[in-house]
Image (cartoon, rainbow, N blue to C red; front, top):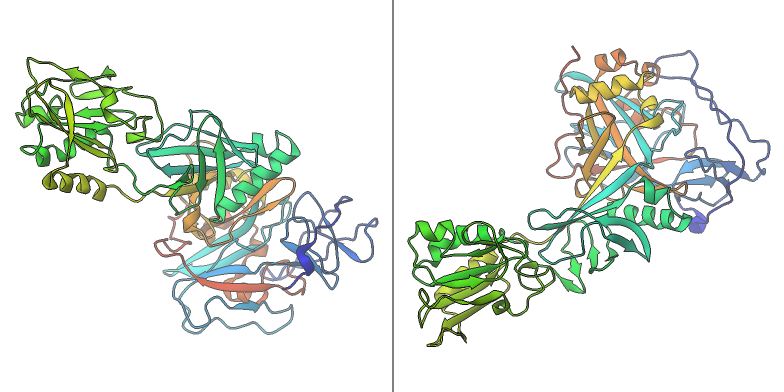
Length: 534
């Protein structure tokens, strides 16, 4: 649907309560249009999809660019995304839902399974009314219900895993986008730097500009777009889900094979006989082969090498240098800077020393002269092959973006009249939670806090509203019998075939569309088959 220039309109006035469906056929609840706000101009319609309550002029869209006024009717701009297990002809076509009273549109020929996602599905926030889609279907002969809604999340964040040895900034340092603080650096993990972006304190607790830019940053990253971030006291980094990070303008290529100690252990046997000493330079744990347990098990001769830093266990050294963007995530560009010297009682002229980083990107070969001073020399081909193998064992450096959202508040009321039952059923694994059809991890403890990899979600899954808040899809699938026990909105359950024909239960005849797409490869079929309650 084309909407002129997606212009934003004035927000004013309060909406009135939407009447719930009255008595009628259980699969055809009554629907009444939104009562008109008396202060609303005649040429505008009021959107009640979020607390902003935009008053939208004809041919324009609201502040979120998700809803528009078309010929006096409020319509959703984006189509509802439907997943299917097997791709048939016409994939990606946008087709209309039928109007009320029109004959149902048939399922696609040879269609084995269709799943209604919450991408483009609209919302009923605040959920004093049922979720837009409550769909009855079957999986392996089991009657299921999937409750579908786009959640409006103020309590949400992104966790970024950035595969790099480069130092991005001190822990707890502010992360900025367009000059505004949008998150912070958190604890580093094995071969990765971690950032936490968003959260309610940035979204609602700061200035209007901070909240707006935070939500915009999250929306772009969630939709797999590139964003440039700067870290106080640290680096400038470009991040994008599924792509290599770019640190200070330099694309990363390799994720470390392991820390310095692990690298020594992995390749110790291959080095034996070709080198006399190996130092794997690492910001966290630098490894020294002949001191290391691996070298001792191979009966390697002690080299007499003395390393700067704090010795942990034999062959493992902490704090050999400051963190940085040089060798092994340190600030070193001359690896010899961490060497204090050699013990003349153990070292010997002609000793062969390899210094290498945890990714194999940096390597240097030295031979001790008569004064036990290391002299640079060409790297032997046999040793170069081992260095290359270190690089071969490094996985590609990528950015991973995980969305974390608290599905609480009134969102649960769109599922059941007793929200705590939904929470308990999820914790009992009776309800399968998905986000745009992608599997979601539900955190233990109270509430419904979900985490999902945005790469497993359909493109364009995330939106925003200027309250500000993130809009993200969420679906709850469970057995039909269990849904009734949970106090689900049974009067609004509709068969899949009818949903595919007419759209959401509150469809009022205005033009809306649907789009079919193949399920994301690697994702399990979203409805699953949860166990029976009790």
